[in-house]
Every structure is written in C-alpha cells, then in structure tokens.
Length: 177
Image (cartoon, rainbow, N blue to C red; front, side):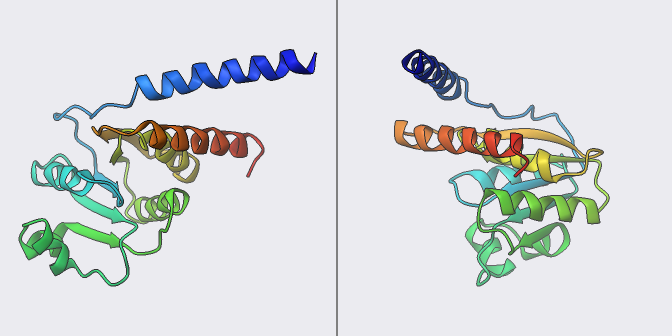
C-alpha cells in the first residue's frame, strides 16, 4: 500500500516536472500596457527587457527589485547604456530583497504605495511561475499582474531545482506559511 502511494506521488512529480520544463512561460505581448513594470535582478536579459518596456511607453515607472546596496543609479545607467535622466525620472531601485519571496514583498509594498492598478512582472522563463506565485500572495488583490518572461535556455539542473522550489512554496502556501 505504501509503495503504491509513493509510486503514485513519484508519477505525479514526474508529470509535473515534464509540464514545468516543457511549457515554460512566454513573453507578454509587446502591445500590453501596465501602470508599471517590475523586474527581479539575477538573470541575464531581465533588466534589459524591463528597460525596453519602459522606453516603449508600455509602463510609466520601473522598479528593479533586489539591487545590491552598493549600486547607484548612475552606475546602472552606464552599465545599461541609458541616460541618467531615465533613472532619475522613472526608475526606482529596491534594496531590501535578497530572494524571490522578499522580492515579492518589496514589489507589493512599492505597488501599493504608488496605488498601482497593474504591474508587469519581468523575470526569466524558468523563474516566472514561482516569482508570480510569491507576488500573487504578497500583492493586494486589486492590483493585476501581467507575466512577461525573458526567454532563456535553462539547464536540466536549473529546471530541477526551480521545480522543487516551486512545489515547496505551493505546499507552504497550502499550509499557510
């Protein structure tokens, strides 16, 4: 009996992992407009994508969450070859977050303080599901979230780790943690 239950759970895990790895989230439509765009640091192409959205007037403001405390706006402007004025007028840096969960809390506080109605979440395709799960749990219900995944070529190891983190966060959410 226990072997059957464990076999069934393993089969569910395998099917779930296959879905997770094969059906990665996609980029949002380029025509989509939100009040703001929020991006989680930590992956190639994420900040570039968020800046493109901001510059295309698809959002009025950008929050870069999880920035190292030693980073200054002029340094980011130089690194991403954007004018200092863009960072001064339209970009906020979040220094509080150290992981996905604290990214979500930082973003939710920022969006609520700004009275946003919609945000576009930018992160890597393999990371989007967990980031969105965390953000949905932290964000006020009246703020809608648009997922905009940066396409990557994640390794099997990256997918394996992320899928297990995603499952654990789902279980924690079900347990009320």
